Length: 499
Ligand SMILES: CC(=O)N[C@H]1[C@@H](OP(=O)(O)OP(=O)(O)OC[C@H]2O[C@@H](n3ccc(=O)[nH]c3=O)[C@H](O)[C@@H]2O)O[C@H](CO)[C@@H](O)[C@@H]1O[C@H](C)C(=O)N[C@@H](C)C(=O)N[C@H](CCC(=O)O)C(=O)O
Ligand SMILES: Nc1ncnc2c1ncn2[C@@H]1O[C@H](COP(=O)(O)OP(=O)(O)OP(=O)(O)O)[C@@H](O)[C@H]1O
Image 1 (spheres, rainbow, N blue to C red):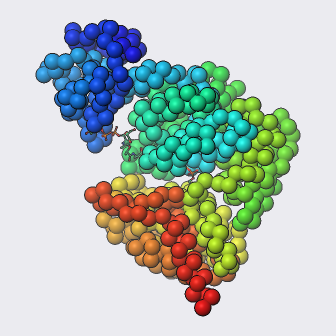
Image 2 (image 1 turned 135 degrees about the vertical axis):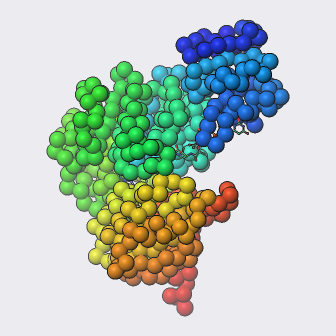
Image 3 (image 1 turned 30 degrees about the vertical axis):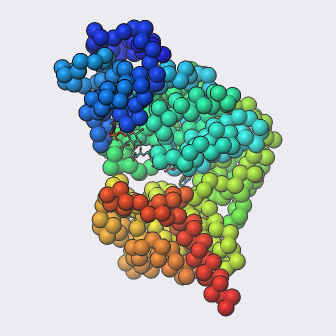
């Protein structure tokens, strides 16, 4: 990549350029982080939420970058260095990442899923279906980033930075991986983490309340999510959960591109006769091309029936046969921390489930699903995360107390907020006539809930799913896995019962 290539790639967003540019200058790579500069890199200054990258131009130059891309004109006056002023640094970062990696999203088949819930599960299912059919596939999801079966990283963000996505596309290309499964968060869309990535299939699972700390209103959150459709390839398809959306919202998309699914008879793929126990689920699916088929799965819940059908439609679009798909669904064991049952709880006659439900809608779904599975009681342990949407806390308290028999309110990831205040806000929604208890220490809360359980009960430990650390103020992290803590409590109980 040379300076002249950069100028060409950014031509429509360049506002001004320095007269120090040497067109033939060979550049190494591109980064927006002054800490990661290698010699001859391009440094792109991004105004972020915590920092302004423009303040790191000098350290970046000191570390050996050869070109800076900036967005804020006021930094030019004392800059005696090759620069390009652009109208949008985030767009520049995306384009230059793809340029330096020599990738173009049109070379890949990309499945992008957005929605408040169901993204990770859907992309994981499609990745599994492709892998079971011996097809190369990459997975970029909250829980894991994988190229084929190789774990590359357990990420922090749901959608990685554009630099990371671009690098993963490059690594995928080098390994002959053509299929990419990408979770797309609303933050990623608004921060242009998917700029210049065009999708073959875009799926909308549902849009319910979340992240209203970040987006100014629900309408704004919804608008951002729906705008993902602007990144559809010309021959791409859009998959929509018919039960969860007013289809009028999609009138801006050519209806020939839309494929719907749901329990509603009006959907293109109709789910029928869902039967489930705690260990398996089966349902019938009326398909437009194969008539009625039967689906068997070891992941359960009507929300997972949605996720399965979502991925099934994408798999059909990517050319898999129904035989391949049905086989893949049977062998799919679920995503870590998503209605994950701890097998050892079975020996105690009740079930302990780890679930990532951290939105009102997800909590409602998971509790309703649990209720439909047992005659016993539902015990829920949950809290609400700090530095996040405060308005959802009371609603989650209401839902928990309405839909379960015992509510144990505890800490989630308080982050920089006062944990007791978060608990108070959750408690506001709880019906005080019903059984509830506040145990701030999460380990003690999980232990208590498991000790409350009797035969046939289901204990739902909600909110943190697969996460391995609990986050407290000032960036303090404590190793904490809901699964491990619950498994230890179950073992302790089993040992004490044997005595
Ligand atoms: C608020 C937010 O979303 N921030 C995300 C954003 O960071 P940012 O652009 O604001 O960057 P910043 O930290 O302010 O820094 C600004 C610039 O200065 C640069 N810098 C900074 C320091 C320095 O020493 N040198 C330097 O050059 C940085 O590299 C950056 O270019 O872009 C980064 C890269 O893409 C993200 O990692 C980061 O996610 C933070 C960590 C985060 O917590 N995000 C959450 C809210 C989030 O994105 N969540 C969604 C959805 C989760 C869900 O599904 O529920 C997600 O996709 O993960
Ligand atoms: N299709 C769905 N509709 C509603 N709730 C769902 C759906 N799928 C999963 N859930 C619930 O949401 C939780 C998170 O599921 P999943 O990880 O698939 O969603 P996500 O959109 O990827 O969320 P995140 O980006 O926060 O990881 C699950 O543990 C379950 O409680």
